[in-house]
Length: 303
Ligand SMILES: Cc1ncc(COP(=O)(O)O)c(C=O)c1O
Image 1 (cartoon, rainbow, N blue to C red):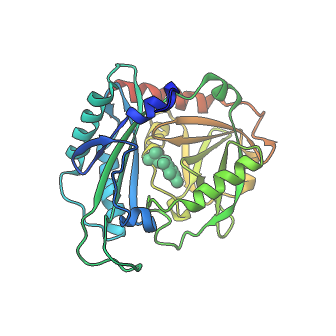
Image 2: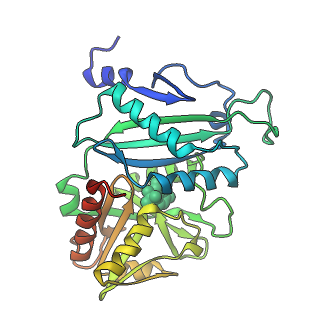
């Protein structure tokens, strides 16, 4: 048994798997699970603030759409099941402080299958797993310095029917993060096969130039981000002109401001791209206002 308190905490954590609370690091899944063997599964990452999941309905809808894309049969009532699973994890692991910020991951794989091969049988018994981690909010240093990003060498193909599906097959995303780290960057930005801006490895991308908010159009093979949709509605509310468009890396280099947006991290400024400053190299005012407003929304319990 480890005496390292951090390791001990990890060993103690629970996961919710197919309706049961189990030790997160215990022997839980069958080796034959196609999620493990083939990345044959889908997932969602949800922010939970003060025990309240943010925009759970939107995540449940996107999870169902991902399952349909891969023909993984998903029982009805997932939103309620996930809500209960989150409540059980919060109770089991003492994550119920009103200020607790959690990242909750819901994974659905096609489940265990006997035999080999890519083509799944028509009958499947999906595995559903829910995990919760306490996360620290994005730190002040990061908000003051902004993220440094690098353009990934992996390209996204907008014609690929899976480009917009949140599958557990993330090897290209892992590759992009490793490449970014080798280059001294915090994250990577994907381009499409025809050289347009797409998205970051786990966040949507936004630019601001001369009072116009731009984000890559859904034709760029990107995820329909829940935070992306919120930011577009927010822009309308605060009177910021906005467009969804085909954007090039030059648009990013010419922007006054750039930021990433995702459920758990919220809005995070981007201040350098491949070593070149965005705007004056500091987080911009629209970015910080978007961050504050999104945080206020997340804490309000309205989502
Ligand atoms: C590739 C990718 N794009 C965008 C996002 C942002 O989506 P959301 O705002 O729904 O968290 C994510 C989130 O994990 C992602 O993985």
